[in-house]
Image (tube, rainbow, N blue to C red; front, side, top):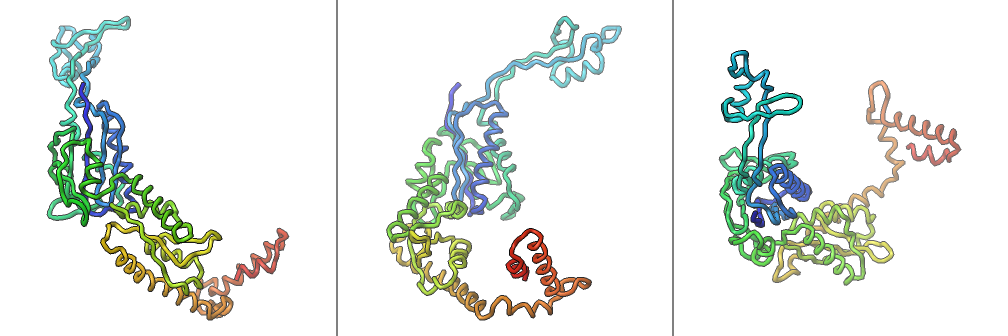
Length: 391
């Protein structure tokens, strides 16, 4: 039985970055299960994911299911015929389900009795006929909390779909999936490489997308590149980048062609607690903070662009302008909070009702303070520290 490489790529608008990995992994797991359930022999199943595409590549996929022998045992002879030798309703129903008449059934004799038997040689279906429904089923089972509908159709998916590529070797498998007719067309980077091109053979993926489309479809390769380039960028300025796994995953899901750049912010902002600055850089801007060897935050950050610019200084300048007001806000609120001690806010709790029968928030605070002090006394802890913490 001949084997070929199979490729499916679903070209979409920008997919949710925090869900990209799970979508791709689920797609691969679902499709692998479909292949196994159908009895289609196959090799390794690779998944690819980028902001505007989900893809699977299956090595050594059989071109059809294997032929198989089918046996279905029917009713016992005693129940299959009446006293006159006419087929019973049970026998006729069983035969009808097998697509034969009772007269065409064989007989199976064992030590325990004799039964009607249906035997057939079933020719395996072609992969080309099976795959479209398997892909559609796999996509329908993806963990998508909210579906979108676009245009005038009733098609639903996580994001609008623009292309569907289905190749078995060098042949396009005809199908309509998510409202799109399958083809061999692939879209490249929005601003780099070829915006659209054709792929001749499934084996060319993902290399052809890298070379002609300027898209690194391999999620892990893209993530590894970001990590390595960010570490090198931090080393060049004498620091260490905070490359948390969750942020690395999110950034890798936001770019198709990662370009790591280094920028800076005004040193005056370092007077603000580092936690506030880092929260803004990582949470809002998806930047990687940089620390010195002693663990002190440096006035620099590393970010990832999605394009190779002829003038990267413009991109750097733009990101510095964007982050400045956010850091200024953090500075403002920090300085505002410092104008009063926490204790100075206690009287205001007296003006806020906690619950009609339980008094104000100040009453609640006093109860917590007293309870904390009592517990501390019972366990031998510092009562003063406990009551202070209860405020």
